[in-house]
Length: 193
Image (cartoon, rainbow, N blue to C red; front, side, top):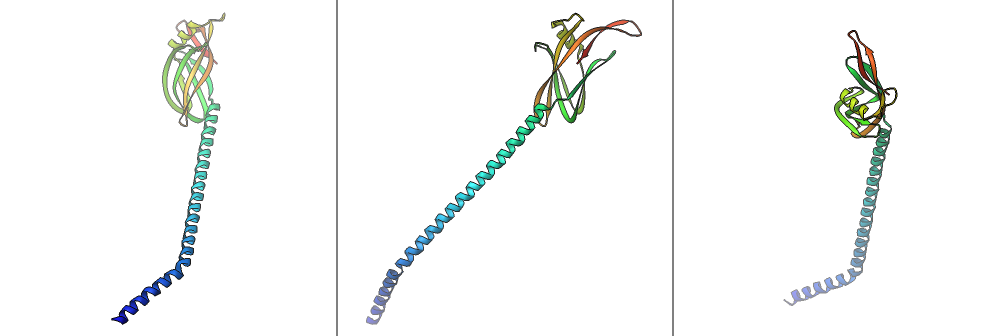
């Protein structure tokens, strides 16, 4: 039994000596593990900063693209032509190089007071809008009327392009004229740009 006790004490002493001798190695291993952990943390912070920079660049590029679209749409203005055909009346023809949507048109006096609005809801590169004689008459009546029996007015065209809305003001003049038809002379209102 003493041999077993001696072996046990020898083993314990050997473990203690090994533990004491390995303390420096364990401390150095802990330092190495701590250094690796700090390096991993620093790499993660660097990756996070790079991701934030990438997100910021994407956001800036998106905002610049949106600004460019707004500026383009701010400058977008279709060509306007007025036409008259008896007995149909006046029409406004809007032409552009790209498709756009005309949602509605507002009839305004020259001072900007609204006398009426009509829904249009057309989408194309070329949009033809019939002009309301009723609203023309109201705008003309609010005048002021000139010596040549005309009055200035404005059309506010409510447009949409690429998901953005824009009102576009078109100045015009409405004039009373006498027109000889096969049946008789008739008084008509003609719109001119």
